[in-house]
Image: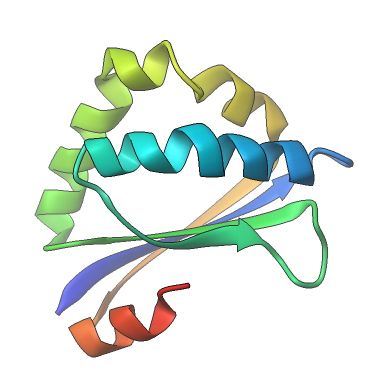
Length: 108
């Protein structure tokens, strides 16, 4: 089983393309350098100003530790943090446990 976090963002109108560029070029590679498993990310099919980020962890405890370290890092704080936060109007977070096979099925 893997602990999966699904983040759904409603972005400020007209920012979807720029947000995706930041995610693709800066944020996701930064996640990967910090050994965070980014399963999938992208603009929603129904609205380019809605966005999803799916991350997987070994456990809920691991998720808490890894994300605390990531969000406290200078890489994040001095990197894409402000541009990302500025683009998000609302954020919804869901966390669940899924079999590894299901996580693999979610990969883009």
